[in-house]
Image (cartoon, rainbow, N blue to C red; front, side, top):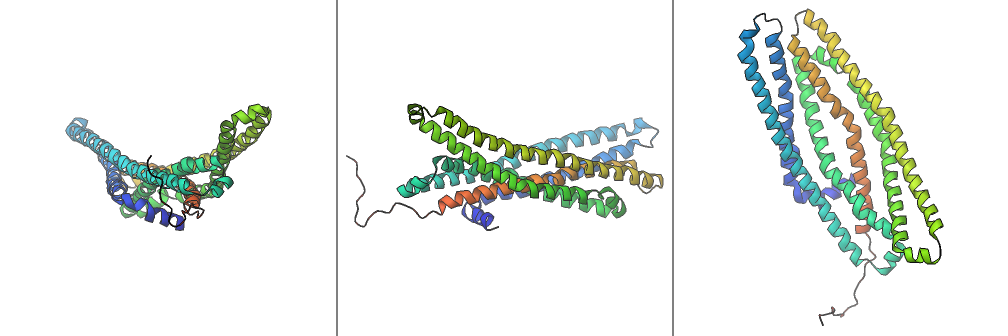
Length: 337
């Protein structure tokens, strides 16, 4: 949390108003629209089911259809500005970080540069800053929206019919367990992938910048072997991440299908008893599917935050370095000649 707090205090706070509008106000508006649309579907289904005179409900269906389209267009506009403002804040944070990193590198001593690997520095200024940008943009927006949608949808379902809500959501805890397990296992893997990519960048940079030396001493085969090892290590790390994804994603899909069974089975019983209407079942089914993505994406959000925090730590290592060039007292700057 210390890394996140420092990132906020130093960089994110400069663009807090963009995140407040895009990540909070507009995300709340998008949530309100998404929660309302199933209610509109419910009304349309109830207007048709059990009504023998379909012509009498024609004007009402037309009105509700136009209303559905209107809210869809409003949601599209809201999402556009929501994404744009959040990405504007994230890109600004990345720009601030790159500026401070470049300025810091320029003032580091010769001793530091002798010990540091150029490829590693480049990786921290590119891939690590990109990981931080994704944390501040995509990660933060998905986190806030998911929190809003889970609270709103679960709250409505429980208030409308607690027993049916329990039957509809019985598989969600299992889905949450799989999502958390996936994030716990994938987090270290993604961090090691970043480190391995930094090593590969270093090898490529050193080989390309020193290509004249390599050719002069006929070291092409050794350099190919050296690159092959780090390239193979990157492959292994990514395959490990792919295996985790291949296992946990179908497991989470299966848990999501169990929730659908609860909606249909228990909803059918309540419909036969006259407790629920067909529109209620349609709305609950929409809400269950609306919750699947937020719960599943918990693993994605955690992995984005883990990569961003790991990148921030690597960036702060450079910014916190004390090996800087210090001018002697009385030294005058070099003037123009």
